[in-house]
Length: 179
Image (tube, rainbow, N blue to C red; front, side):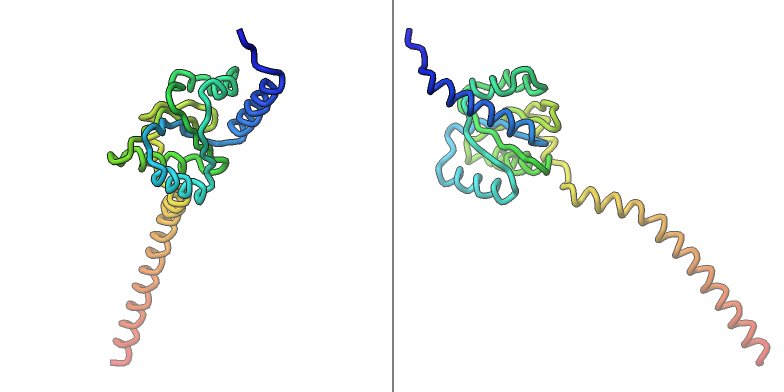
């Protein structure tokens, strides 16, 4: 039986340590099966993910299993078969899911979502697709602010209407007295 050399083991330990650090510093990640994707589609996908601030790379299943062992992400182990790539986002928990779900929905591209995680909680493929359907952080903030602004706008309109009514009444009295 051939055992790997000390140099190879150290290299793999370094890879696992780096992968573990990347996983721990990410707010979200998506694990995909990229088997069959063309070079052109893969290049386009990587460029789109890079522009969104998402790190995407192919990973060996065994190394990902070792990197997630003993963490909240052990739930990913059941999907770590076949060809595996992972997309990690350090800031936006939704962007990677949105981009990868768009590619997975394209029937011309043989690409599928295996699983994912958000803030240390593992999601199945359906959970990742549900996450992808959420509005972006900016849209959610705008909706919340709009909800907070509506009562204030309504109150201002009521006050303005009362003032308009008072002005109309005073104007009518003034016209009546001059007539």
